[in-house]
Amino acid sequence: MAYDDLRSFLHALDKEGQLLRVTDEVVPEPDIAAAANAAPRMGDAAPALYFDNVRGFIDARIAMNVHGSWANHALALGLPKQTGAKAQVAEFIRRWEDFPVQPEWRAEPLWAANAVEGGDVDVFQVLPLFRLNDGDGGFYIDKAAVVSKDPEDPDNSDKQNVGIYRIEVKGKRRLALQPAPVHDIALHLRKAEERGEDLPVAIALGNDPVISIVAATPMAYDENEYELAGALRGAPAPIAKAPLTGLPVPWGSEVVIEGVVEGRTREIEGPFGEFTGHYSGGRSMPVIRIDRISYRTDPVFEHLYLGMPWTEIDYLMAANTCVPIHQELKRDFPEVQAVNATYTHGLVVIVSTKTRYGGFAKAVGTRVLSTSHGLGYAATVIVVDEDVDPFNLTQVMWALSTKMNPAHDLVRLPAMSVVPLAPQADTPGIVDKLIIDATTPVEPERRGDRSSRVRDLPEAGEWLTRLQRLAAAR
Amino acid sequence: METPPTCPRCVYESVEKLFTSPVPGVWDVLQCQRCLYTWRTSEPARRTRRDHYPEEFRMSPEDIENAVEVPAVPPLLPRD
Image (tube, rainbow over all chains, first blue to last red; front, side):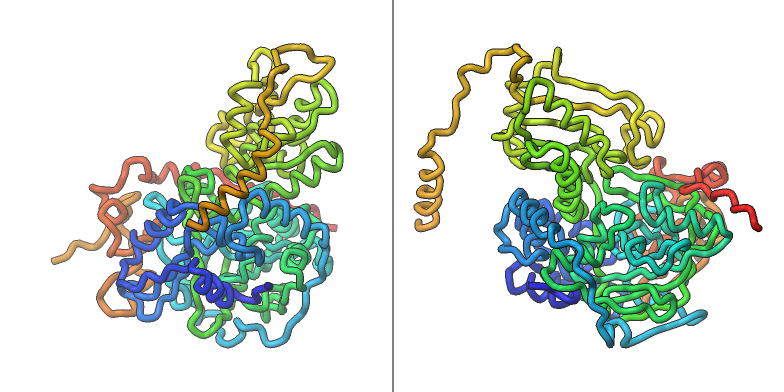
């Protein structure tokens, strides 16, 4: 089931019992962020939240935590809501094999119903903006798909980018943008600024749920996010040309903001509570001038709370972080079974693998560091045996408890690259990385007594099914 | 008489109104013209009043002056 806009997905969540409407009046702060902070604490089937009675606003419609549980993430991919994390990642890997699926240019985009331009632009009139965390420097937009082109190759749709970046609202038609050096949009901006030019951008808010997933996926520079959306949806992603910039944006967005990143301008931004569960900023960052806003009638403001994990962002960049690492590892090491990079965008990565020979697991672990995503993440890599499920932390802890001997199994690599937002670094952007080999030593490595492993009884699997059936029938 | 608002974060006295509640008189959104801190007047005191504003989030003119550029502005390419 492919959703073409946010509203049809909200409707589906509602039907599945995964959308909670808060109808009592709430105050913009701290209520909405606090509720979205709390929602994921309800567990793996936490609902999305919908607010339409917000004090001081006449007609605010705010959707939070739309991707904020494994159940909602499954529904976004058209899977049954009970699908577990590991199965969702496996399905994601399978669907990525259909990449690329060309997007479909569709006429009469939903956001074309209303527009304001130039001096009439006032983002506050269109979006019911509010603060997320106490120390945030202002109100943010943090779940929008930002679209830009490579200024040196603007006709190349593979080099265009659709990404989610933090955006601070600084005025009626003024925003700040965080293009961290590892992000594709930072390459676009650099090229524009080297030429003394502005960088045109389109910011699409309130999208069908797969657009948010691909925009948060660490794809290669020359991979087109819409073509991955098509593969994940099982149908081409509908897109349309934004009227002012000509940039390709989702056909079904609630709001499309167009403008430019002003070349060679920096201004104080932040701080902002980030995905690491820590604040970052204030730093001097690029500024966006808004030139046009197009929007659906009665737009829904879809927003994302982030803070101490897990919050919605951890679900939004969980499965999609595992897959590229899995693909790169699998190319070199077919023995790799599964990759769990769901922790803080892959700052910790757990890999299960068969071991070809002694020392092999350490090679797999260090290879994680040189994957495209691992270059900026993967501060700690844990390697476990093929029969340990990296998504089952009790099994991973068992492997660490019984197989890891610090005398042999820790590999520390000094002064490696990491995203500057990683708070543990002495110098932002540089950190020592650690490989923990929690696999069973194999020949020619002879150490530890591994001879008496207790394995699940062959009949246990059948019994699990039988017990689950009995329990369900009670 | 009500005293004009100062910035709870950097104590600057030039504060502008960015937006006002569509339901009249409920709240305003204000912005400091130096550190650009933006707040709604209806927010809790820990976000709106200097005497309650947490030490860890306060900002000084030096902090603004010394803020690191992210990303750094690159050199211009030489023109032909």
